Length: 287
Ligand code: ATP
Image (tube, rainbow, N blue to C red; front, side, top):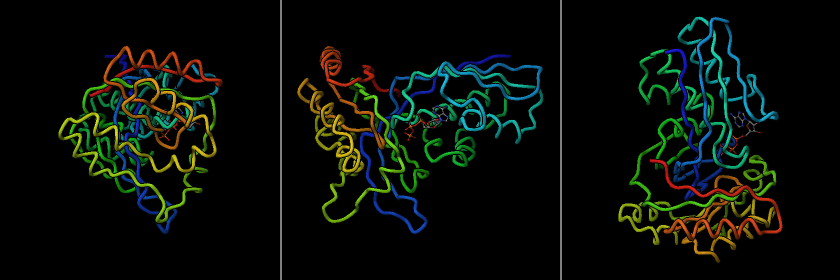
């Protein structure tokens, strides 16, 4: 086998809580992660010319060590003394810097694909151990599906599957700095924390409506006041049949949950009519 391709799914956070800020500046989180069927695609091809060459359809993305794909390929090449070269093409479809772990899922998928291409024989847990050295979300992106992420994102456990539904994604064309969001987060008695444990209970009961009532992301307290477009998108989704709507990660992507595909498609058209530019996409869950 000289060439292999892999789809790298995006994630959304259906629950995101920050428990505390640690002495070292990191934040302890509790997040429910869910993969969705919005994919980047990586194609890896062995080459006789030594070195890693990365190309992508987005001209503004780095194609050197600054790209997480490059770093993940380098990590495995160095550890396993892989001879020859590797050409990687990354077809981006997941919006960049959107709160959907685009870079992390690309790195995770690159490691999964290299494991097959070079027959490295690593299990998922072994790949996850290597992934964490490059980024806190990478182990989850190797695991995929529905998971609870704790600690600084490195403690992962599988939880009951999220009930079947349709997802509308809307990403406004604004830039949100993750650093800005976390450094302006106020954690006090007024902070609205989502009830993550209760959410897991509703998932166990396969109660989609109950789950949607409990959606919560503590980072909205920072991102929404700075970018009111996010509130407008949520409102638009809720007025157009969503069972629930929430910002993913530190934003600016918003998602809506629907029990009916036609409703999700109709809401997508309504989001298109908002007075600012939005990337919109209807999809469902990736198991
Ligand atoms: P998260 O949800 O983990 O916070 P995100 O979706 O907000 O991630 P990314 O799309 O991963 O953010 O991109 C954040 C930054 O990382 C970008 O500014 C980009 O230059 C850099 N980056 C490095 N590698 C990649 C990659 N493969 N795809 C996208 N961005 C990348």
